Image: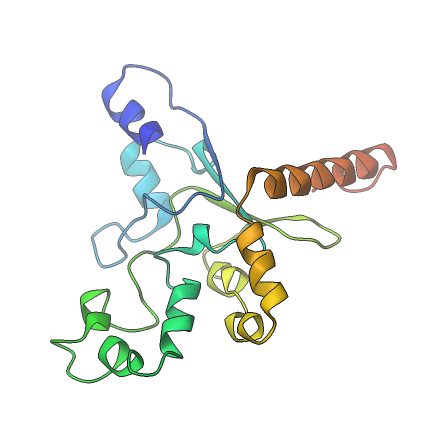
Length: 184
């Protein structure tokens, strides 16, 4: 938010902003005349690389208020809440107040670039609009069945978890560059 305020109010070059595990605070509404992330950034006078968001594989916080918000999956399974939130009379439904359908909660992806930090051979995955929702989805039913996985998801939202994963990604990139492999 501060990067955008600085861009709009200061006579200065566009800022660089990096977030780690931050909930989305600035998105575009795809029901407006701005039809994409790139259009919204262009209106603000920012390049897509000006705002970079890093998300750990199971961190629930950066997914808050998105269509893939893990809280929605949990609420769908809570007896007594599913009908008022996601069904029934659309005019009185909290689900319709929050965005119209259970698939569309409040926000699309945050403005800028979103990177998923994942324990695999690549480590850092830049998400595109067409694959972001599936890449950010969390296996909530699996986590509810295995409490250790739910605890790990909560522990993913910490400085040490992000530091550890970013160091591992940097070591992998360094190893690949010294071995002549592709740098990703």
